[in-house]
Image (spheres, helix red, strand yellow):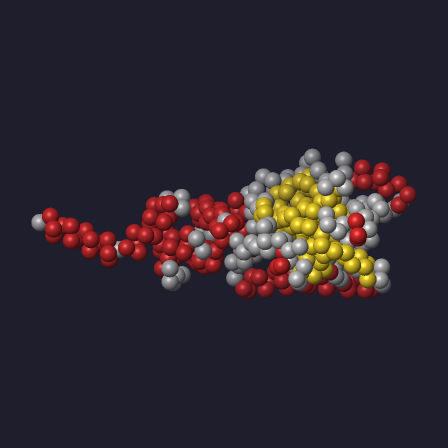
Length: 384
């Protein structure tokens, strides 16, 4: 009898091994039993070849979340507290998987650096210098490092020196490595330094959320004492462009010189919702040549429904027809701005630091243009 029972137990585990593995992995990943049952149903509906991939694979999670959204939209429960809570947990887990260093395509050697990559070079005792990568062939060739407003150090004085190089790789993370300057070459009026390549890069992951580049036209509002921070505004605000977005904030381009530590809210269409984000401008990058600013915007007081809508967009899970709709809206608004600029014989400015934004229209500046001679007073009036 004992042998029969033992044989039945072994047979049970053999038949249900995949299900047992799925539930065990789910419990180890922090999901509740009821949530794991739902995830197992989602894995079957999404026809995943490896159901447990939901707990470690970004593509599988994308497919699973898309199935959740599809089912919720079909039965009208997308906005329910239960679905939104479950989506929040799925997105949080997906972010964890996305940012796990074991799943990242991190840079292993300086040989993979691209021409044009911005660098910060530290020469001990002399300060921090700016440079760019010219080539990453047999040696790493960079522009002669310079300090704004300071006399440059001639190329020969760099040769033989040990330096530390810092860089931020778009869509990845920040890196630092130590190397030595082998040679200095001057051609015409340009000097280049030749550095030894390094396979010892220290990667620092600072991101708490996943960002994506975008082109979303939005309305920006400065917060007034009588303004509701989460409601949709009827009156138009200042036109701006969201250039990247995450659940924690965005990079926003405006006309004119922005100002940090200002409370604002931004609203824009996303999927079938009007999204409102309230937060603080934490930093400003002002380009005097184009008279435009990039605002580093931190989203505070996040609403779960808004956050899930943003995450859906960030993780590229929106149905293709919705993405096409958003692209069409942005393109149409851009065409309108360009036509208006052409009619007024205004040539949109080009940011020399970012060729990706060539030809973007002049966005509205928050500062009045009535009296350029008293610009500081006007800024203080606008930003109380």
